[in-house]
Picture 1 (cartoon, rainbow, N blue to C red):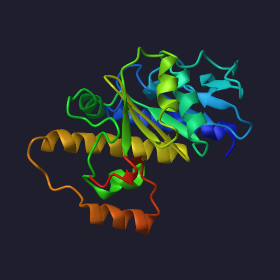
Picture 2 (picture 1 turned 60 degrees about the vertical axis):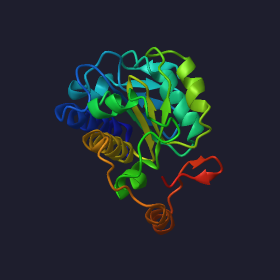
Picture 3 (picture 1 turned 180 degrees about the horizontal axis):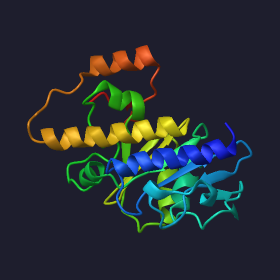
Picture 4 (picture 1 turned 30 degrees about the vertical axis):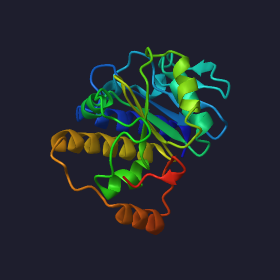
Length: 223
């Protein structure tokens, strides 16, 4: 896909996420890794609903701005996830309401934010880790993500929002949406003792779809 087409793809998905209320105002950002090692990144203080393809920032492989508007302040977040997930081609960061709400709950296990409520949550995200709160744009968040050692493509920033990597922009968007919908289910069912997927059902998904789930305490968490 040409760079022009990739820029248009960022704008198309950004508008879709914005119009469905998944990231309000000028919140959220999207990046795409290019074949030459550089990136396309949405600009700082830009609404995902009103992006101009020509003004999307282009960075070289060192993160230096080559063209376009000044990039999002969340560059450390994106660079750390790309470093730790070498197969990642795109990253989506949103301030989606239900995922942010879950990030604030006291009972959340930082190694596995949400239980296995649906097969598609595991199939799209593989599970989600919680990263403690950092000021937006704080370079220290990069160290926290590197500390996850590449085990997670889906990360939830406490009191802030999800950051999800994918092998394509479409894949990253779909995984982020699945995380948000599962967070919504969790909040709807909280304290109702819902029937989760059993360890056997999770193991069946892993076998059938070749999933790689984060290992917790030396074993897969089949919650």
